[in-house]
Image (cartoon, rainbow, N blue to C red; front, side, top):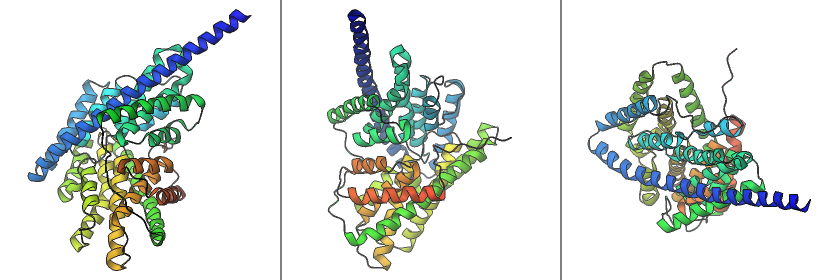
Length: 426
C-alpha cells in the first residue's frame, strides 16, 4: 500500500513539474510573440502612414492591398477559415473537443500585422491574445496530463501576451480571469503567475517602454462629477461601438462574394482616412500627439468638428475593417475613443465653463472607462491603463469610473462583441 501511495505521489509530482515547465515556456513564447508583433507593427505602421500622409492616394491603395493580401492568405494558406477573434478562444474553452489549431498562431500574427500597418482601424491586441492562447492550447494537446488544464494553459498564454503588450502583469492576469477563464482556481493562478513572471522578465531584459509614459501630477476632488459624466458617456459610446461592430458583421455576412466585402469595406475605410488621418491603424500615434500637447491646444471650431467626426466615425471604420476581413478587435479602438472623448470633454469644460480641469487626466480616465465598458472588465481596464502610462496617481478615480461605465453600458445593452451570440433562425 505504501508503495502504491508513493508511486501516486511521484506521478502527481512529475505532472506538477511538467505543468510548471509548460507554464514558463508558454509565458516566454507568448511574450516574445507579443513584443515582436508590437515592434514590427509600430515600425511599419509609422512608415506607411508617413507615405500616406504625404501622398493621400495611398489612403485608398493601402487598405485595399492589405485586405486583399489577407484574403488570399486565408484562401491558400490558412485553411480558408476566417479568424473570429476572442470567440475562437471561448469556443475552445467551452468544449472538450474543440481546439485552437497551430496555424492560428501565424494566421493571427500575420493578418493582425497586415491589417494595422495598411490602415485598418483596429489593433493587434486581439490578434496577439488569440495567437498566445493558441500557444497554450497546443501545449495542452501535447501531454495527456495537461488535458484537465486546458483553460489554465490557454489563460496563461493570454495573460503573458497581454502583459507583454501593455507592460502590466496584473492586467494580464485580470484579463485572463475576467474575460477568458472566469474561474479563480489554484491551477489558474499557478500557471498564469508563472507565465506572467517570465513575460515581465523578458520586458525587463528588453527594456520595453510603456506605451504612453506620462507624468500625472495630481487630480482634484471637484472634478469627480465631471469624471462620472465621462464614465456615463463612455458607457453610452461603448454600446455604439459594440452595435456598430455587430451590425456591420451581420450585414457583411449576407454578402456571399468576399471581394465585394473588401471593396465596400475599403470604400468606407479609405474615405474616412482621407477625411481624418488620425483614424489610420491602431491610433496610438494620434493619442500620443494629443497626450503630450493637450495643454497647448485651444478648442477651435475646426478642432471640435474634427474630434466629433473622429468619435462618430471610429466605430464605423473599425467595424468596416473587421467585417471586410481585417484581423483585430475593440481593444485599441476603445482606448482611442476614450482618449479623444476625454480630451473633447475637458476642452469643452475649460473653454465654456472655465472649470480648469486637467485634459490629460480626462484622456487617461476616458481610455480606461471606454475599455471597461466595451469588454465588461473594469479591473483589467484599471490596471491596463495604469500600466500603459506607468503611473497610478489616478488609481481611485479610474476604479470608480470604470465601474460606472461598465454598468452604464450593461444597463443599455447587456452584451459585448465577445459575448453576443446571434439568435439562430428558425
